Amino acid sequence: MTLLLTAKGLHKTYKGRAVLGDASVNLRSGEFVAILGASGSGKTTLFRCLTRLVEPDAGTIIFEGRELVGLRSHALAKARRRMGVVFQQFNLVRRLSAMENVLVGRLAEAPLWRVMLRHFGDDDLRRAAAALSAVGLADHLHQRADTLSGGQQQRVAIARALAQESRVLLADEPVASLDPETAAAILSLLRDLTHTAGLGVLCTLHQPHLVERFADRVLTMEGGRVTSLSDA
Image (tube, rainbow, N blue to C red; front, top):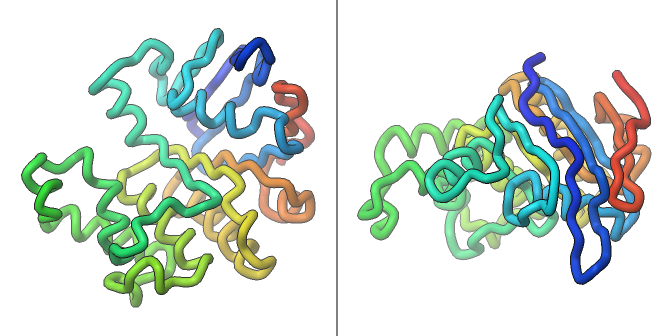
């Protein structure tokens, strides 16, 4: 398995309080890694630092062999396109179709005039349709997001990350708002994608029984530090 992401010694302080303290993690292709931790342990801040939505105060982040800390503008945007994020709230545009929401993942690749007119090329349309098919939504391409079930909406969010050709998927409590059966289906999908698409998945969860069932490795966060609990 190829090493995709390595973060070492990440520190982040908010208003004098240390949220991350020497946090380190690595992720390989074809690997599903779960992070367990109580609310306030630093899980979300870790993800925000990994994607450079928040600047770490110290530490290094190597993604696909390149240091992310210090990247700016176009170089940072290009790196971010390879790192998809799936949230608990789905973050879809409710009035748009599943297909249109997935195409948002291709916006960075499209010329500005196509973005403004929502006119995408045949290649973008094919990629979006293939991504939705990969997550089991081939029959829902043109259905409005607000008419889909919670599990289907989360699948659209995952398809959006696939359409932007992500190599790493960061899933922040992706099943917290779903019923147990749907939660298991979403985690099964994420685990399957590590094999079929070669993704590396880093997923925060708070249900130990789901972690035990789906994760290849388990990490725990406490007080802004990451500790290994188990290895596959």
